[in-house]
Every structure is written in structure tokens, then in C-alpha cells.
Length: 318
Image 1: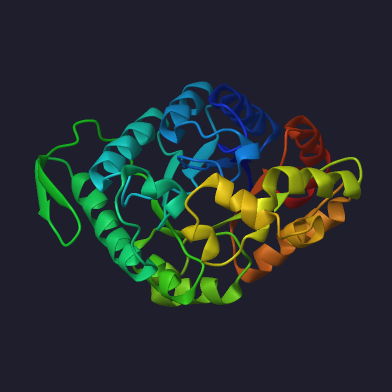
Image 2: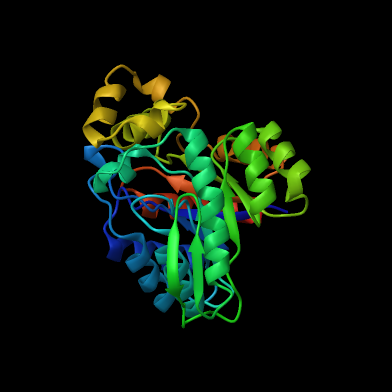
């Protein structure tokens, strides 16, 4: 049976609201939440981008059963892997057995900010593999040193380690990244119901491991209102492929979405009040092999979605 989660959308809400959303999701029976970890939102309209790791502290302190995964953290450029090793260990100590570290190769949107060259995807995949190895090395405890191709650590020791180390869930959207995720990850995270990605992950060491996906939706009282809302707040869904990883500023995403109409930008989303559209989309992901789905309600009406999910989704899925 699939586990149904909820998205804490850092691009759309300030930190205190995200913490309240996590509490509400827990009270309704969502088993987990995914939180985005960005420096910038995708679009200026979205208007937020709080520091995910501070928000996680608030979630840890105000929930008791909700599991949380970063969806996803890029431990390559703006974050050194040693910093993420410490941050993830701290959050895992605050919410024992409830935290997973989701990692990926990131987007130029967030990583260019420190003035470092944005590497091509093949290099970023190499960096991610070394970063995950280094994070796990530091989690062994004691003083650790590392001199690799991309990272150096000199006599670093993480003193606050959780009794249960968090699993590292690796993002993938293609065959090469799925192969790597199977080899180095404790699970898979993706954004599309791609059966081949799941199969490649499983064939390379991922058999039996959890497989996460974010499902972007927009509930509203009618489909037209939902489409308008989704286009207003999340038109970046129509910016597909490598372009979404290469654009450097929210205003560039704004410009890219000007070439889209609402139907193009929202064609992959379940929209409106009909639960069958959502249930069918969930089935598409479960048929592809995903075990954990976290629902991303676009726009400000989170309360409406919570009521809808309580009546129409959670009883039928979980």
C-alpha cells in the first residue's frame, strides 16, 4: 500500500505557515511530508524561500509522528557536504526515526549564488556520489579527513549524532541518475511516474527500497478556477527538461512561462474538485512502482485541499 504525504512548499509560504501545515498534515493522517530546499523560488510570484533547515527545527519541535524528507537538498555547491552531514544529523536527533535526507544534483537557480561555475550534469553526478560518501563517512563519528576530487575535509567530527542515522534518498529522472541512485541511495525520489527510472533503480541495487515522488495538484471548487490558480502560482511546471536546471533567476522562469498557456503549463496536474482525477494520478505512480507520494497543493488554499484530502483521498488511498 502506498504512503500518502504532503508537500511543505517553501517557495509559496513563510516558515511559520509551513510549520502549521506540517501540524495539520499530521493531524489528518498524512504519514510524511516533503520540504523543498531552495535559495530562490521558481517564480517571483511565489514570493518565498525560507531556509529549510530552520523550518525543519520548527517541524521537529511541533510534530510527533510525521516523517519528513528534504525534497531535495543539493549538497554540492552552496552547501558543502560536511555542513549537510551536520545539519541532517541534528534534525535526525530532534525527530528520531522520522527524518530522511533527500539529495540531488540541484538547479542553477539556487547554486549559482556563491559565484561558482555551474557544472554540467555529468560532473554534478560525480560530485553527488562523492558528497554522499563523505556525508556517510562523517556520520561514522570520530575525527574524519577526506581529500577527494571535489571536496576536502580536515579533521572534522560531528559530535551530535542520532541513534538512528537518516536514510539518504537520491533523486533521479533519467537512466544514468537512476543507476547512481540504486548504487548509492537508500531510496529513490522523482517527480514523474517513469517506470523505466524505477526499473533501472531496482536493477542497480534499489530492489525493496522506498521510492518517493511528488505529485503536483491544484484543488479548487471548479476546474477552471484550479487551472487559473495553478498557472498563477506554478506555471514553472511547464518548463521541462534540462531547462529547469539551467535557468539562473526566477525572472528567467517568469519569461519562459510567458510562452506557455495555462493548459500547457498545467497539463500534468490533477485539477479541480473531482477526486477520481487525483486517484487516477496516484494509481499511475503506484503502477510505476512508487511507494511514497507527497501531494503538492499549488496556491494559497491549503485549507481547502486539507478538507478535500481528509474526505476524498486519505480514506481511499491509505
